[in-house]
Image (tube, rainbow, N blue to C red; front, side, top):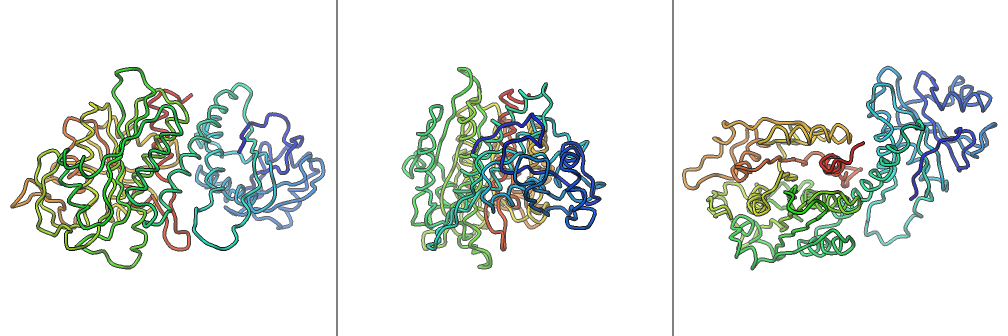
Length: 499
């Protein structure tokens, strides 16, 4: 895919199609209004007689519009003008690219302008359209044996309008957006694979392949013997019931100055979660293949750092295993010892993500990191609290929390901060060990984070609970790629690469 900016008049663009936005009230603004004037009001007439309503997500393809060099003009609905927002604009962009993907259009000029007050400067406009194009053209890596549909023909996208003085920032947006789109594909391809393919061993091999493809990346994959040497008792406890051997994956991007403290990203890599002895309800258990979405987001973020050659030291840590029932599986009431030396009473074997993460967080200490962010499909309680709209954020460092919140706002991949006060940690008291792995039904998303917080003292740490945002259910079942855009913006900002 080739991305560029359009600068000449829209009507003169030598592309297969130009795409403009239309509000429900029939309003055409900016480039769309000018194009309509040059087309002898062809679009206005169609709208006036009710052939196009402008509803959000609606599209209409017009052929051979007079005064327009492109043989096609695509109208994309922006919804009501009074409620126009970045969200409705993004929906219009996605609908437009989706409509073009169903044709044999090879090139397009996008002129769907964001509403006033959206906060989208030329950099974010270009980055967002590029990222949305990649996301809209993504096709699930399914294992169907029938004839595959032809891939979309679209191969060139021009984005505008961009004032001449802002072209440099917009071109940076194109570069960043393309890298985010590529990272999203890495994430979604991994997460959408079935668990009999995407095993802990497969994740380790894929991490090495990604590292081999980028000069700045190095990958190491630790096996069970290494984990025993490192005394990762919690991680080893979770994997005991599985026939699949666990892996502990370390990927490093060395792009910063020598001696710079790294950003460490830790991703939960449970490639399938049955709940163990505390067996899950069978309904929708197939979706537990997505329980390694945190791991996928870490590998995607490292890919982005390498693609953009970010001047940062970034470390990715992925504890990868299955959580299965069996004769050797851990049981409620068992007590295990973490790599940090704390004993943990396992009251619920389905609260396994925090167990593997606590050993990974302890491993992160060896890097003396500037910041640690863990990413995990950790709790159903977070889904209940925030739905599929916001990622849950808990942190012991307010400055780091604000960085992530602002990154999410810029990237339209938002997070919402939850409290982390001592009362939640008190719910994890155990009569028999230093800490229990669950703290009761109330505030489950926060008590899970409080458990992780016990292993991050002295670190600037944040936790992203992506249980509600990492994937969709039902007829749209599949990975969303979140929170890759948030992490990408966070790393880009840390590297000082925002214009």
